[in-house]
Image 1 (cartoon, rainbow, N blue to C red):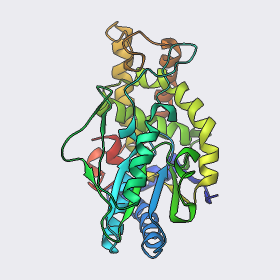
Image 2: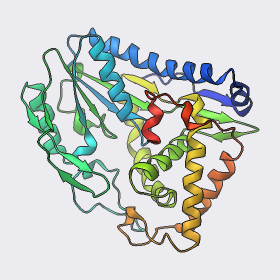
Image 3: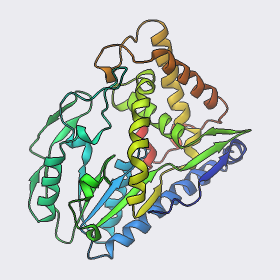
Image 4: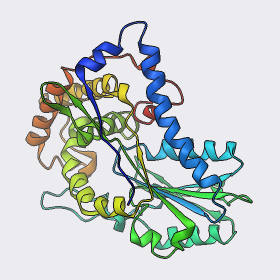
Length: 330
């Protein structure tokens, strides 16, 4: 089992002390370097292990898996180990999902993936063959193939596979375990005031709200109405995935407390207004069939807003282009 280390704990007072005009740049730089250092250490471990063929990256929603995978690929390339990248999201099937008692579809389940195709292609890649991989359009929820999606592991290369279920027994079970490295990533930190303002669940929730609004055509109300499905899925599988991991990555970027929550709050306010004015009647997650628990989602919106209002704000322009946080805002 990977070692989680100590949870990063930051107070609102700490944040306020770091936001003076002469301190912001150093605050941002130090936070980004802490994350970069984690990436470089893992890349160094992989680069010098000639036995390794593949790295599987897993973690709960809005943990930064995709950006971390690309950062890891860059670090490995610098060390002379080229990579081949696969996203498990591209193996979603365009099929009816199982639903809970309120009609919410479970898109988080590994059963929504075409695991047979995915594992066939992973094995073909590890055997040295070229494969034509699919792409899944998250907005239109359909699989497409394009001519540019041909993959092959370069000589002396490493296969990097990222996705919610990257450490599932259905994925790792058919591979030689000593030739695969398991990485588990999530933001592991808390923001404190007179009590705990934000914990890892809220951090990811705010990241997801911002990302869904900017990239996936879902409002904050829709994301929060769907969140119970995410909670159940993660509680069912992630303890065992973490136990399987060889390495843990803390993707919390401390200054994000001053950025992401405020971006998410803007999305929340817009969403609440639209819902209350009758302009938001259906959830994209429910296929245009209303909401499962709109009133509860609205209450959660209000709860998050009350927390964010107590946090100092930092302009988005302070986020470097290379930051993992761009996955949730641009």
